[in-house]
Length: 99
Image (cartoon, rainbow, N blue to C red; front, top):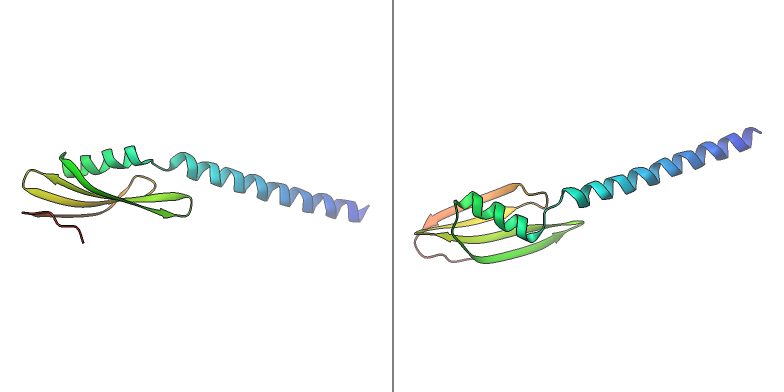
């Protein structure tokens, strides 16, 4: 009888861990942004303009986005995390050159 309860307890722990893993993956998938959302966030951060370059890098379950935007005489390099946060903004005036 004691062995049965230990087996049941182990099964419950494994089941709970599996449910927790599924919920965590679902949360990541639900909270991440796609390319269109990231573009809009970058354009909002630049106050509008035209996207002249873009780069997407894969980081595990989500992507990170980098956009070059020209708005009038000002250029912006904007990085967006997979969850839609602006993580870096660089700006300047004159000709836009991407490294």
